[in-house]
Length: 373
Image (tube, rainbow, N blue to C red; front, top):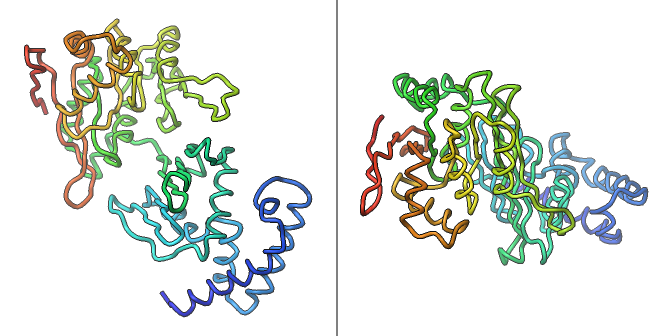
């Protein structure tokens, strides 16, 4: 990277900012009025004046600082980039092929960084504030999560996680050396035998990809009810439907939780109930549904190993049923759950299948777990 050129572009950006300081920042950043359009036209004129001596690529880069994705533009075009993390104007990271890298480019000023945050907020129809310091939504082909600077005590933080463009299946998992054909046949048996299981692993380990792959093994005539906070799971057939939670930060509309959706799913004739991720008290409702005979259901959970997963599951069930004792909680788990599938990454950052563990029995001091494949 040419440092002199970067300094020059940063200087030009400051020159542009100086010329638009006379404009109303709030009216420039927000709204869809004719006044805003005139201001946008004026900004384009200023950018053209200040960048007339630059190449087309360099002009576009500066224009993107005010209109587009700034230094993230190239990252959004890369097919192997699965996550983009922005901690501040010059602290940008991206995950590519399973490895986290620092981006060489950066925003040229706090001003243009704040404009970028505002553009993203507008796109997901939410705005950050002291009352609402967190925002989640979808932008382009990414799930986006924003944390206000009142929480980070520095700059607003933004995370983009890519939704899969094409549905994962076991053929792709085998080709990517995630698992062997023998493991695939074992997974097929789990699905065909209507076993209930959890897919566990740390963040970024591919839990949702494996869940999508398992869904592709279900029969075309089976109706799966898929429950999610953010739409990531791909419907396996036309008989299946997706139910999404709803949260209104302004408190005007009724909130719809995963607990509500599990109860609603029971009235919609599901062959399988699929939960994108168990995070809280919905663990109790989900396992209660499984214990009533809804076999062949599965979900994901953040945990590193089967024992940690069971401890987390016990804690989450207790949130939904604080009056239950530990024995009652463990009996529910034993009654409703058959397997725990563990996924993770190897030392090179490549996603890998780690093992499938069967819950054999509930003993006096806990569960007896055995690795099956």
